[in-house]
Image (cartoon, rainbow, N blue to C red; front, side, top):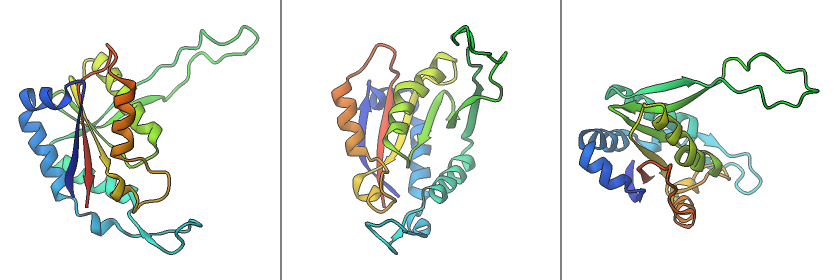
Length: 189
């Protein structure tokens, strides 16, 4: 795969290039090693493209996991103990909600990476919420979000979001004071 789109959210590119150059090179190397053609294995059952061969996001995610893992990047989970004191008085509330967690696909040397081939809401959540949470927990200082370009997303099931749409929305949203630096990388075959 190759990087064909770069967007610097809240000075993400500048911060990562200045402070995490080695990690950025590993990210670029991992992306380059994933051969998307090996993951075009899903036969579409959708009305708009019956029988068409599509890229399989789960298979692509496994390939990224192998490549990042080979470079020492690891998944990182944090426990999420949800508050129960906000239930209404007439609700028989549990003492706690058990087993909840948040996880980041890959973390190394205070850089967090998310690879997203899903719905739009997940891309926004990763950058506008999850990366801030991991920063507030003292785990990361900056993030990288890897997403497909539109031309690549068009080869997946309908509803997969893409770089161009994501960048437009981030530009319209602007940067809030709690946002951390994030480099958005748009990839394609």
